[in-house]
Amino acid sequence: MEGAGVAAGKATAGDLGAYICFEDEAGQGLRPPKGHTWAPRGMRPVVQVRGRGSGRVNMAGVVCFRPGHRTHLFYTLHIYHGRRGEKKTFAWQDYRDLIVATHRQLDTPLVWIWDNLNLHLVQEIYDFAEENKQWLRIFQMPSYAPELNPAEGIWSLIKRSLADFAAADLRHLTRVIKHKLKKIQFRPHLIDGCLTGTGLIIEPP
View 1 (tube, rainbow, N blue to C red):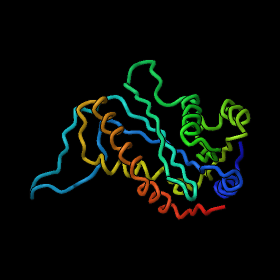
View 2 (view 1 turned 90 degrees about the vertical axis):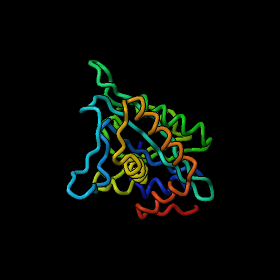
View 3 (view 1 turned 135 degrees about the horizontal axis):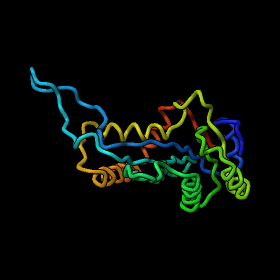
């Protein structure tokens, strides 16, 4: 696993004929993101939710680019119900499984770029990358520039579409998030737009 960053990842992807894949995480609880602030004159805008609510939908997603090929989004969810002793978020194995699933879907080498989250840096991930170096290269993004990750744009689209949305419960929220992610999967121009928003350009080798 290497730490040379985005530029090195782009060069490596060109050399391997690989997809360059940007991974990131986000989460959403039952309290909706803030959206509209307008209301009838003299009335405070109110969105009713069921108390504070417990639980959270954690999302890990990867956007994959290769010049001359279709852009892709793959994701996995972890549902935290707020129960005692329950795992709150992803484990390193979940990240490994997302890498493997992406490789199987694309059937090409992968250049995988993500941030310096603790679970991205565990020894098991290093070992997994070394064992699969014939098709996998992993690079860390600079910690000072999260805006360079186009996967951040996916979460922006999701949050915007959930603004002022009051889910009935965690199951309802999960169903809605899955539906919105699937819609983005079938609209590669939206994923391309997330790359454009970073200012990065992925050029043919």
